[in-house]
Amino acid sequence: MGRGGHPRLFIIKGLSGVVKFPVVPGIDMVSVVSNTLDRPQEGCSLAAAWDFMDENMRKDLTFSPVEPVLITGNTIGQHVDCVYSTWLAYQAGWLVRKPGAFTLKQSMALGTAGHTAMMCIMELEEAELSPKKGDVLVTCAAGGLGSIAVVLLAARGYRVVAST
Image (tube, rainbow, N blue to C red):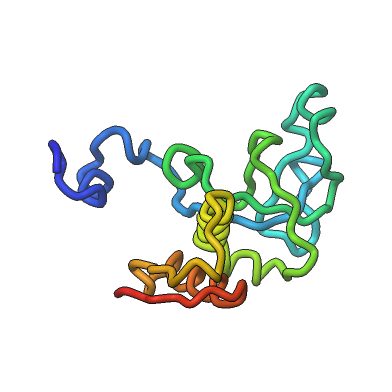
């Protein structure tokens, strides 16, 4: 397993490469874009800072202040502070518009696991997998990503074989 053993031991031992200490943990966050760094929107504990971005970053942005956004991954919680922070400022490209069909709470319930599960299903379908081509084995089906993959595959008409 290498010099530190299991990846979790890298974090516990403070070994380089997995987490840059000190860092505020958490890999998913949902918030609203704020138009000022020193005045967060009423009732919001987290915010992506609009004023933090330079003019070029703002031009690339398709979000407006007070719009709900989310972020998953991007080394957040490993090398960049995340959800347990009061105020957050991120690269504009990391923000994703909250899907209209979901509440803020539902977006975070799905989080990185839901995003990853759907990306995997999309890759399989691009490789021409379909419900007519047989069963789909989902390993670690009792975990976050696996359980969401089972639900999504079943909703798309696949027969799922779950392994735990």
